[in-house]
Image 1 (cartoon, rainbow, N blue to C red):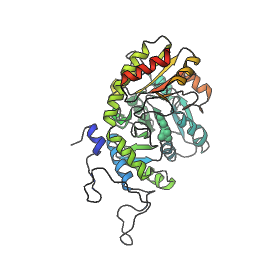
Image 2: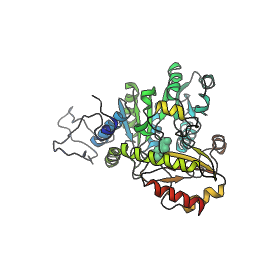
Image 3: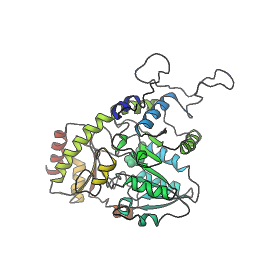
Image 4: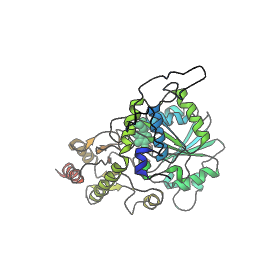
Length: 388
Ligand SMILES: *Cc1c(COP(=O)(O)O)cnc(C)c1O
């Protein structure tokens, strides 16, 4: 019997592992670099923590079960995870990616992966898949195309791509579909079930949930990809350390209740934002008129806790950032604390200006990661920073 998702946050797929027979309810931190062998040719199952460590393995079991994958690998950051993933490609391979992505992913693709011989097209996937046809996207696929890399909703403009439709195109052309699922977390969305081959997470965000640890994940439903990634993680050495693995394990225990509370707060905040005159536009897939609303309802169990909005002037955007007190002006998202971000100078500072402009990321755009505070306090804070 498969557990429900809240139960899985505590126990994963249910294989409770009592590694030392003590009955410890909290999984121990195996703070060790290496493991003693009983004899030549014998192993306890662990050799060296770069390859695997019991605490990291427990975390990987929990994340694999939450994302319904056959394997999950825990990395030292979301970027380390995506960097490792790029190692499965060869020079000359071509990857189609969304044009509105986390700025760090675009920086990696354009500066490191490109140098390693991988070619990219950055396109607006949500727009290309709108309506019936898929020709616009399929026209970009050539002999050397190997994968499609998307985020949905995207960071920061909240564009929603139909994962099933994208998976159909990927299958038809023999491409891997990679979905960065950081924004909705496995609590709200499971791309592998919708046909994706690899799911990426910045574990720093909702999985960790407390703005206190950096981590990343790759989850896959393919034995072949899992084998390749296991070889890469042990070879390049970017696996998550034992203590950080434990912090993320602890964070995940409350993923379900954090997501519920933060999403409830977000709905109320979005309602408030939509009524304010100095706000030109609110980007949130839970708004019934938003282009991503119907798709999100089909493919996810919630709309998430991220909202982006455009204000009338740059001056107002800057004054909001100067005035916030309860809400903190900081990079990152997905933690219990509400954070406000200015994508143009923070998360997306290294993205070419033309790309940003084409996506609508201007100096009037702010991004809110809604936390679990009392929503009345958050709305009072917003009223103050907008109008006082
Ligand atoms: C933060 C983030 C990343 C990068 O993760 P790190 O843990 O910061 O390295 C990747 N994708 C998305 C969508 C993110 O928000």
